[in-house]
Amino acid sequence: MIDNDTLWKEIIEELFEDFVAFFMPDLYKDIDFDRGYEFLDKEFAALFPDTDGTKRFADKLAKVYLKSGDERWVLIHVEIQGYRDEEFGKRMFVYFYRIFDTYDKEITAISVFTDDNKEYKPDRY
Image 1: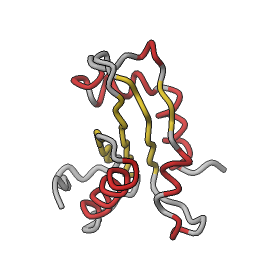
Image 2: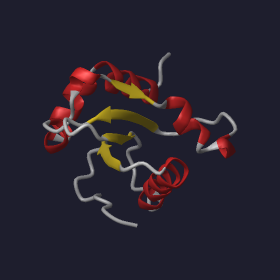
Image 3: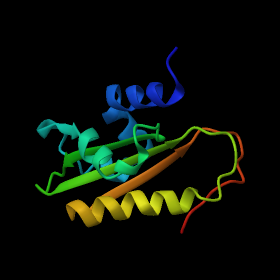
Image 4: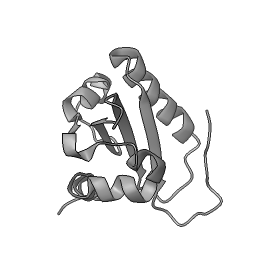
């Protein structure tokens, strides 16, 4: 049986251009998809060696090139759990900071919540 994390990761990979177009239309118009994109799974996993093989959330880190020629890294975090998580903002901050601190790359981050709690909208840490 395939878990939700795996399914979301596959959806993001298979439909990456459409995903960016739908969730990040301003960024989409700036990306040069003719240059391709690369998922940085090994780079992302290396930032969290303390997980010891335990499952993280459905996260993808992708390298894209902008039409200006600049490189941009896109962190996509899909929150699959159906409950309020008071640590979510902190977790996103840690992801963002570790990427920036380790690789010194400009990052665009997005979170997609899949639960039905419309009141739960963490927006800062």
